Length: 314
Image 1 (cartoon, rainbow, N blue to C red):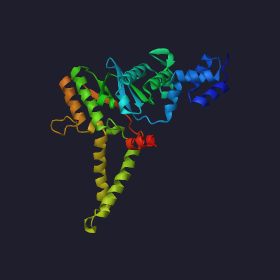
Image 2: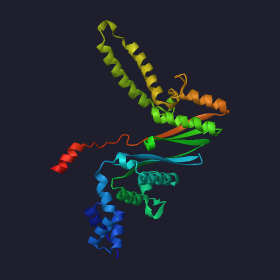
Image 3: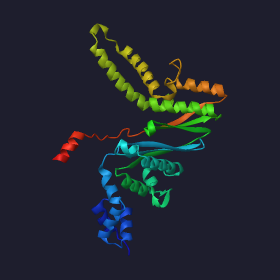
Image 4: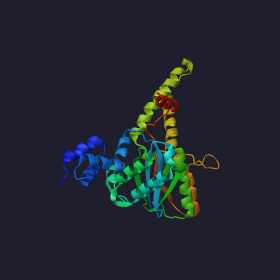
C-alpha cells in the first residue's frame, strides 16, 4: 500500500526516528502504526535515535590512505572513552574512514546519504544507527576531510590510539623512504605543536590586526602597572607590539616553529626541510596539513559518580 507523508510524520513524532527509517518501517508493515513502532524497536532504530540528546565528545580519529597519493581522516564520537577503545567501535571507524577515502561528498549530509560500502542496501547513516544500537551509546560522525597529493605525496600520523590524526600534503620531486620519514616527523610536529598555518603568508591581515589590538591592550595594562618613572612612551610600546606579534606568528606557523627534534634546539621546521631536501637532492614543501583532535571544541560530559549513585538510591 502507498505510505502517506502524514503517516511518516506521525510515526516520526511517536518514535523520534528519521523520516527514511519511518517510511521503511511503515512499508514493511503495510502502514500498521503499532507494528511499525515494533519494527523500529526490533531494529534498534528507536533505541539509537533516543540517544541523540546525549553528549558524544569522546571517540577516535582514523585515517585511510592509498599509495601515498590520497588520504582521508574522520572523527567519530562516542559518549565514553571506554567505548572509544572497544574493538567493534574501532573497526567501524576504520570502515567510515575507508568510505570517506572513496567518497565524493562535499558535506556531512551528502556523506551520510551515500550507500554504505559494506552493504549497499544501507546508507552511511543506516550503518551509523545500526552501530549505535550495538554499542548502546550515542555515536556520531562529526567530520571528515580528504587530501590528494599534487606533485608529491601525502603522509599520515595517528597519535594516542587515534586521539589526534594528521595528514601532510607535500610537494616534492623526490619520494623515497628518507623523504617520507622526514614528512612523518613533520606530521608528528603538527600533532604536538598544533600550528594553525603552514607559513606566515597564509595569515590574513584581519587576523594580524585583531591580534595587535589584543597585544596593545595587554601592553598598555602592563605599562600602567609600572611606576610612573618607568612607563614607556607610546612609540616604544608600538615597537614592542611588532616583536610580540612576530613571536606569536612563529608559534602558530608550522614553517617558523622550532623543530621539536632539533639537536640544537633552534632549527626551524623550514630549515629542517631544507636540510632533508639537500640530503636527497629534492625540493620539499608542505602544501597543507589537516589536523583532527578528538572532541576539540566540544562540550565534555562531566559525570559525578557519587551523585549518580545517590540518585539511584533515592
